[in-house]
Image (cartoon, rainbow, N blue to C red; front, side, top):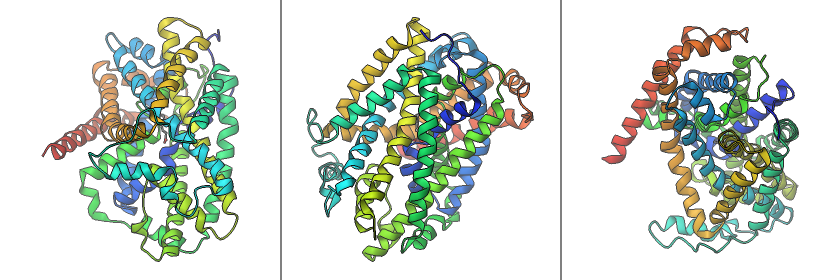
Length: 458
Ligand code: PHE
């Protein structure tokens, strides 16, 4: 049994935190969310959410894990009586996400192989995906068969779990840290090649213009603010028990505040880079089809597995190569996030039931791997979309709200946390940090949830 595991180096921790943050959300979620919520104007609510909620909460979670040295449930239990459930709730949400996140990575892996021969043919929309997209359009219609595995996804899914659980078996330093040391630099390198190619394609400027064009009227809409907070929380893996778990492995002397700033800015930089790459490519696609950029914008499964293959098909040269690069990037970005989500329940099970890491990985990881098989069937894909929608639109904000209120108002720990972080860093937090967490974030989140409910109910 690994005794109180620790990161080997500071860079190792930062890479792991950044690896968790940079995921599918950065590549296929952010570009479309920004576009649909005001384009260039979206950066205002986005930056506001990053600076007043994202980074302050990262500092909070890093401090919590570092101070209490436990998985999320154990850390919440040490925070105060009767709070352990908050940790379990976060772990439970992470568990659910992991079961479908793994399936998406498996799809990406399958598509990386497909791209070597452009197996999706001239009309990627009808290849594997076609059936599924039709069913989504048929609201209320038949949603496909459970038990019918989508062809080509089973073996990649097994591989995804073998890699993820293999890394977790190997432990924090030899497993998680090592994997991120390899995957993250590789990802950044591959992605830079893709972006450089994308911005030099015909029509790229049209795509970028569409992406950055500000719609200032959107700033007063609560939907846009919900989107900004949702994106920041999901993208930074906040309120999912992850950052608490990862920071519980930090050595005693660690500059928490500085680490949080690096993680936050690295994640947003990658997000911006992905926005530029994706919209350049969409601009190219609109150009080749002679339509407007707005007609080709999409996100999520449709963007990655229908629109991107179409774009690859149109590429002037090295189509197989760029297809392979793109899908491999998705796999790398996804794997490092998946590893972090699974680690939350591996750590929680270890703490609670006093079992070895190996047993916890077999138990927790094995169970989610089994459940993920359901999402790899045609019927499961429908629920994958639904689960993703629900978690992003309601789950994250609620978990974040409960977290700040529990720590700031019930446990009244902010001053102690601040001292803990300030003692370790040259960057002193000051009152602004407490105001962000105790006042601004709960007020904004509370109002948003209320307004969202109100407009959804009427
Ligand atoms: N942050 C990851 C992303 O941007 C996703 C993620 C969310 C990972 C929640 C773990 C938990 O895709």
